[in-house]
Image 1 (cartoon, rainbow, N blue to C red):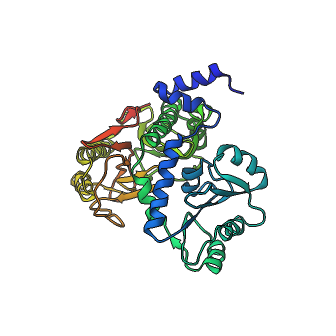
Image 2: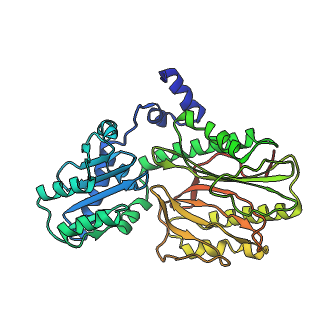
Image 3: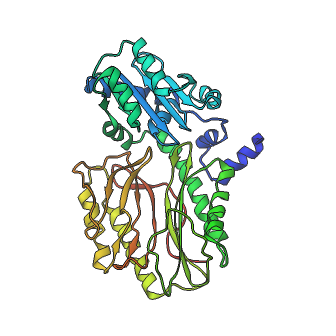
Length: 403
């Protein structure tokens, strides 16, 4: 059990401002009543705009951010909730042994075990509340069976997922505070990789080193994608999503994308390291292009900037003879959010015509690679869009560090 003094040490280890230490030290941190009321009001307005009277929100296997956003409960196996303006939320969780903690964390909701079917329990609540056909909205990853059950009872359910994403794009001051903690935890993971990386370690051991950097401080893993490749004869341009068992050797590049979260509020930081050797010319050029792309994108970002400007700013990548595999930029916090932007040589699936807005959180991440996709580097990090530019979340030094 953590003692108060140990918890204070944890907060100091993350170099957090005083007003964030209480969040880290709480047994189960909570958003203020005012913040939760703001969210419910936004959803109530959305329901009114779409002609809906009730909302079913759901998640499963830690996927479905609306459950935590509206109730505070991080989804475990399954959760299905009902929101009706003017009434307390009903929340049904799986499994039965998860219900006691859900009742404690989501204390403003009426929480219960969902029994044989959480969506059936939610339908019963909707019936008691007089829900009518074609006036029930849904946010979250409904299964085919769940959708069929709702539609059989209430007709055409209204998909509000895209509208929900728009609600999550601009962050409140409290959400930004929680993401600052997530960023600090992510930094700890990247610094642990930088400081613990040694020739002879396996890729699996690198992942263990990363997690030791933040788990004891209250962080949870979103991703740690780590690539290892010989710079003299590379065959890997982007960190893989699952660790292999290759051993790090002198002359390798180790490049990583790390996101640790504080209660579903993550950071994201990307860096590259040269192992016991100076990078050869190709890798120096790759990283120089990535740095130039990061700086060019950062220079155009501000309230009112357009996504197309980001793509044009990133064209320095192609000017240097390189391309990308990953996205150049994406929104973050509450999901992998729009805009999700590529470059001129690896086009975006969709370039929206809506401008960036102050309060949006995005990740600038130019994963610059050779045209044959054999060599690549990572650099970048999560930033906050402001009225005049960007504000940083992360403190890990940029640059191609030699380890």
